[in-house]
Amino acid sequence: MEEILQSEVNEIGAIKITDEVVAIIAGIAAMEVPGVTSMSGGIAGGIAEALGRKNLSKGVKVEVGEKEAAVDLFIIVEYGYRIPEVAWSIQEKVKNAVEDMTGLNVVEVNIHIQGVNIEREQKKDLLEEPAKQNKNI
Image (cartoon, rainbow, N blue to C red):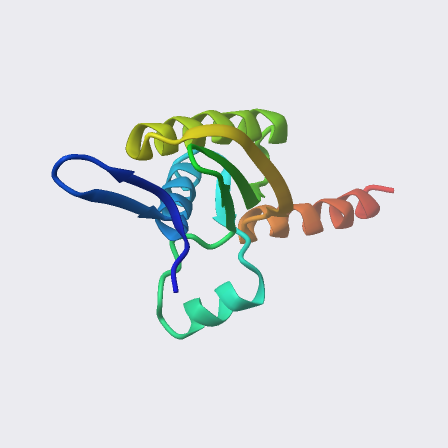
């Protein structure tokens, strides 16, 4: 059974938003920030991806009250980006996206940096550099 975050009743009917919807909105908004390589979803997220299913809420935990939400994001940052600036950008983008699309008041956006992604060419350069320095000695 899906947990209902926000339920609003008007003269026409009810509007219900599940926690999964808020998590997807937050995950997509975070991935749009330059410097975010991926979201860290743990073992369950990795299994879903291995089976060919894209998990848009991977690396996102949402806690919602009646009209407020708190979001935790677990991300991998691309090497070379300033982590505090990436985190601040994620907080702003996620807060705005969730509030605009759901009407919930986002009280917290907590960023958990789970790692740094080093592209293969950068990794190769980093490994070759000490070897070059040793030859010059």
